[in-house]
Amino acid sequence: MKKSILLATCFVAAVSCTSLYAQASAGDGPKLAGDTIPQEDRMFVSQAGAANMAEVALGNLAISQGQSDAVRNFGTRMVADHTAANVALNNLAGPMGLALAQQPTMLQEKTIDSLTNMSGASFDRHYGRVAVKDHEDAVRLFTQEASFGANADLRTFAARMLPALKQHLSMAHSLPGGGL
Image (cartoon, rainbow, N blue to C red):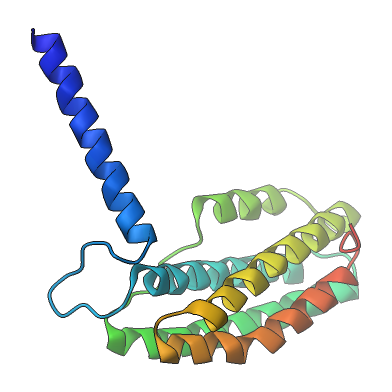
């Protein structure tokens, strides 16, 4: 009897969580009173902030551990551009009550950690591959927001950042390992 009640309770909880997730994914999720920023835009701010932080950390590694001038120069550019992008995003999101991620995602941290233990030509090749993948992901994220974001200011920000991200991707392709 207790087991069947427990199973029924778990089932109801699972269905409720699935329903809430589906609503949030559709942008119809629960909102706080006065909350006008859809979940998709909130996720964009969080993901973009985490990506910027990861690029700054990776750029610093490229500066200190890269063997080639191309990798070190690219790292310097990533630190400058992604720091500026995060400042601009924070200046936009802050007044909306949105907070940027305070650190890279766990997957991004794992990538950073893996590169921390590398040096020389091996670092350069791996960093080049990571830079390409990360910027492909960023171009997709920012294109999605620029095209479909609900908040006009965030859409404009994403559209304004896309040319630089595409340029970063092009530059990343020319790094050792960037041609995959």
